[in-house]
Image 1 (tube, rainbow over the protein chains, first blue to last red):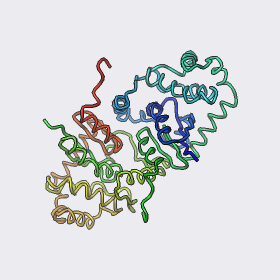
Image 2: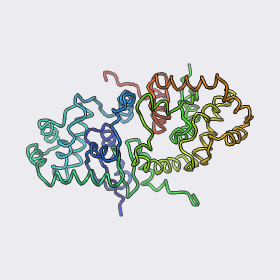
Image 3: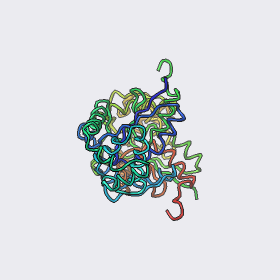
Image 4: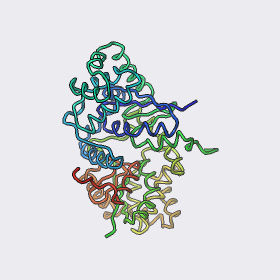
Length: 202
Length: 202
């Protein structure tokens, strides 16, 4: 049976954006299925007592320089958004309102529009534009964000994340093994390749 | 002129331990000088408003599983210390009380005794043992921890770290570029190799 990676992602998280540019190729190399699960990090922080990076000013000052180096490493665009955090509820619901097969591409495009291009993807007009660029009907997506099923799905993703020990974003699961942060992608790939089994007697 | 890496380290920090097992080889590959600078993370947290990982229970639960996978990745020993955090003041002063040329080896041995073997390196007897294993006179080291110069050096390292924007451990500087975390070692190595320069026009 193919391994499965669950990718809990949050629209406002820059490290989620970075991970989103790498995770599909990683899953392909590992022969793993990939499930994109938007969640609301604000609710996760409320439940766990964790905080945004920018709650610590020194961390906030470091973060953008760190992101710039990571963006150069991965050769991906990066632009500081004018609006931060984005309206995560609007973006995450939009991502879940797309037809399921198109959700990964749409999620990736939403993250790239926000952190790669600095666009305020919490606004309906931007959601329409990103939808159109992904071949989706923006009005249908926006209508979908009002559906109870979409709202419930976002709530249940977030509750599931909290119940499984998530405290930040991005967070990945391979089975019950959790990986937090875009800086754990390499470690997760090693794990998927079976290279991190405990030594005998350890 | 050779590049220089400044390594701000804290005795209680498990990610500092992991970094300490890799940083010398990295510096050698990069042709960089390496300066080990013990600091007191407690004071850094007071000054910055940052907190220990274990202040968030979900983060604490994740941390040890993360450390285990990192230890397997790097093939280094890992043992959960019985006493946490260690008496960082005692350990950091001991590290600074050794003759300067032996401080890196002693620092490394202290971190390994604590996070690799779980020993309470804040105790004088353990400091003596680790000193002896590094070819140092344990009594001389312990006597040195009471010298004003050693105490002042630890205080000034910590103040310098705070002034330069440090908020956690390990933290490295290459010139004024800061790198936080053992998960930025690869990025720092790329930076030292000149591979992360800003693209023209970026």
